[in-house]
Image (cartoon, rainbow, N blue to C red; front, side, top):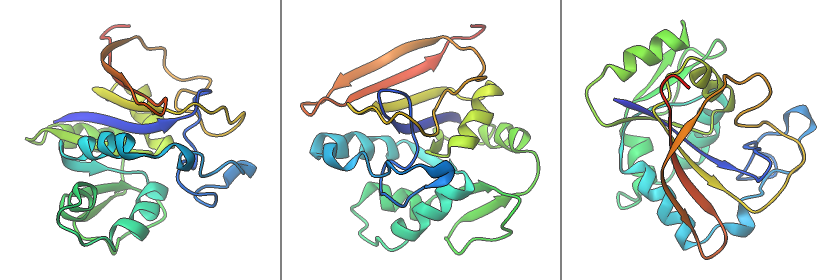
Amino acid sequence: MKLTVHTFLSLDGVMQAPGRPDEDRSNGFDQGGWVGPYADAEFGAIVNGWFIHADEFLLGRSTHDDMQTYWSTVTDPGNPVAAALNGLPKHIPSSTITSSGWANTTIITGDVVAAAKQLKAHPGRELQVHGSWQLVRTLHDAGLVDTYRLVTFPVVLGSGKRLFAEGAAPSGFTVVDTEVTSGGLVHQVLEPVTGA
């Protein structure tokens, strides 16, 4: 399976707490919910399109907790995001939890890089990572990400957790696809250049 990363970014590369003001206030972050003013039908179509390619998920523990709270309550079989998240296998690296109340969820207690390599060896299309800042950084630095799908929003936050923060492994990318929505969102599909 290909390991694919999906996230929302500000112009200054922040991916922290896009959905709600109280989503992630760590390190004093008080700019949460910055996606809201820009979310429209085109944005929704992009995100729905991501989830139809998934066969399994690898989610950071905080992202798992946040997603479970909302998506486990969405029972509409016609909702592609809910159908994928509630029905497909989910893998959660964590040293703080040993089980999850979300169906089809396995907790990874050992080496996340080794576990990700094993999951990538599964048959299927995509092992998807959504959000999961710390996990993405680990996977990026280990060279395990095959594709990045990023939506950049026309906003500068000034602080927060960044996708590629100082110390990230240097990388080059090939732009596979790009589109700009009528609301000014930029959706890019990027693949790391081998040996960059």
